Figure 1 (cartoon, rainbow, N blue to C red):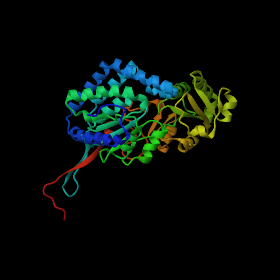
Figure 2 (cartoon, rainbow, N blue to C red):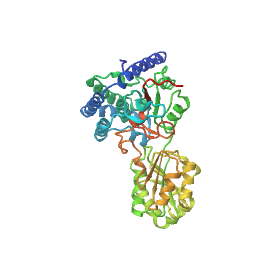
Figure 3 (cartoon, rainbow, N blue to C red):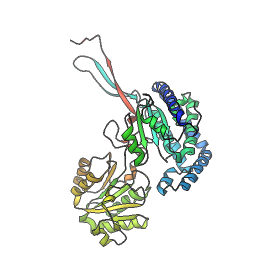
Figure 4 (spheres, helix red, strand yellow):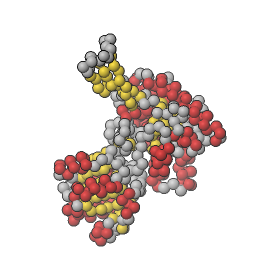
Length: 429
C-alpha cells in the first residue's frame, strides 16, 4: 500500500494514481463476490473502530479547523468541516445502519419468460470502482466508504486539503474494519496527495479503472468534474431549494417548517434558499414566518412589496433568486398561487429539493406532478433531503441528473444490473 503523504512530486502523481486504480480494480473483483456476512462484519468493525478512536479523530480535526480558520474559511465551510463526539457517533451509527440494510448485490429485480421460452432475470451487480471527490466534509470518508462496500464496490476517496488530517484519521478506521474481516485494504483507498493533478488523473478514468465519479463540494469543484470527467458522474451543481407556502397552509406548521428548512443547518445543500408565499395568505402568514426567521438571525432579501410591509427585509436583486447562500440568508417573494410558484421554481431551481406547505390536495398534486426536481416534500422541511433520513443509512451524495441515479445515492443506486438468461437448448430461427 502507498504511504499517506502530501509530498508526491508532480512527475510521480500519474504513476501513483494509476497504481491506486490498479489496486482498486483488483479489490473490486473480490468485493463483487464477497458474502453479505463478511461485508457486514467489516462495516460493524469500522463503526466500532470509529467509536474507539474518537479522541484521535477529534485531534486530527482540530488541526484541520485551525488551518481552516487561519485561511479564512466561511462559517458554513467551518461547520461542514467540524467534528465533535456527537457527529462521530452519528457516523458510526450510520455505518451500522448501512450494515443492517438488505444487500442489493444479486437481488432479482425482475423475471419473465417470453414466447421463446427463455427464462430471463435482471439482477443487481456492483458498479465496480467509484471515485469520490469531496471538500470539507470529513464524514464523507465514512459514508462513501461504507456505502460502496455494502454495494460490492471499491472506492477511491479524494478529500480536500482542508479536511486532510480528519479524513485520514477516519480512513484508518475504515481500513481496520476491512482487515478484521479479511477483505482487501485497497477496497477503500484515499488519495495520498492534495495536488490537484490527482483530481485530473481521476477525471481521466485512471486508465479505465474508474467506473463512475461522485463529486461532493462547491460549485467550482462540481462544475469542473462535470465538464472534464471522461467517466459517468453522479452530482448536483447547487442546492437552490424552495419552500412554497400556499393559502391553505396551517400557519403554525408553515412557520415551523420554513424556519427549520432554512435555519437548522444553513450550510447544507438541502437548506431552503427561497421562500414563496401565496399572496392570498400574505396578511395572515407572511409576517409570522418572517418574524421567526429574523429572530433566528436570518437575513431576509425580498421584493419591494414585502420590504414595504416588513422593514427588516432588504431589497432582493435578480441574482438572489439564483443564489445558493449556504448561510443564514433567504430570498422571499409573493406569488399568485400554485401556478406562479411552479413557474418561479421552474425558472430558478437547481432541481435538488422543493417543499410545499398546504392542506389543499389539488395544490399538492400540481406541485408533485409539475415540478421536476429530484426530491419533493409536502408539509416537511427540505432538510430531510438526506439519505440517512430516507432510511438508506447514509448517502454518497444527492444526484440531480436523470440518468441512472437521482436524489440520495444509497446502496441500490450504487449498483447496475445484468441479465441472466437460461434456456433449454433453444436456437433462434
